[in-house]
Length: 306
Ligand SMILES: Cc1cc2nc3c(=O)[nH]c(=O)nc-3n(C[C@H](O)[C@H](O)[C@H](O)COP(=O)(O)OP(=O)(O)OC[C@H]3O[C@@H](n4cnc5c(N)ncnc54)[C@H](O)[C@@H]3O)c2cc1C
Image (tube, rainbow, N blue to C red):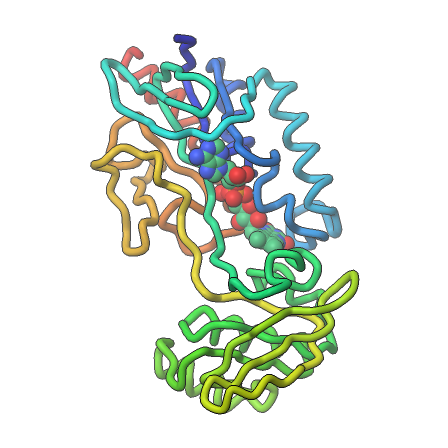
């Protein structure tokens, strides 16, 4: 079984940055990625809030970061990590391709955004279907958009979207919101927000980008088209953490808890980026987490003599 000092699960901004810092600290590093390097960053048409790059495509940033990680000496494998188990002096990491030994492991596997199951929802991701108002709000300036969901993030983000959009339809399948009352009051007081309650989106349609949604009133059964330039999904997201061993402490929702070094409750197992219990999930924070994990994994190995 090949051994590494650090095996990183996920090749998004957190994982790739961790690999750069760990490689530069002299560690033998393997990054396992099961889709495309860059992670969710790659899904972003244009990134406008990464420091130093007023406007860059997610694909460009992803490729540059992947190249940089390779140049620093990281090794890569296209595989899904299935199981991480603590074993004598480190971990066994089982992937869809092979099993490895690792002195330390970093969970940098991000999240999955739940999407609607309706027609067009997957097809238009990155072309009008978004999961992040902070990231993509600037692209719907002077447009009418829909925000889907009934929790805090749906109402908070709908409110945020009114900075750009001329109107935001909040589409929610129930009569009542799960969101905090203060957020509900703020949304109700916002003249740019219109509620479509007891309603669900049956289809998202358009050409190159989203042009309309078909909304079904669940009480009457009637389906109406609404012209929109974007659909923002806030129907929940979850951490990709199913490969982790039992005993990793998590917060509500399964988010991985870490200490000041970004180490989990299992010694030698670190977490970085969106998968972590954190208050901001962005490229810059994922990269910053990755840097700390790369450095702290090296310190941990030295301290433990692994
Ligand atoms: C549409 C969209 C637009 C966005 N726009 C912006 C923006 O403009 N600015 C900004 O700062 N942020 C933006 N974000 C958020 C940003 O992309 C994320 O915060 C960031 O990518 C998180 O990085 P990460 O490395 O933690 O996770 P991810 O980028 O999610 O990377 C994790 C990687 O791990 C892989 N993986 C998961 N499980 C396994 C496994 N078991 N084995 C192997 N690999 C695995 C995944 O396939 C993925 O590639 C946007 C997000 C979305 C969805």
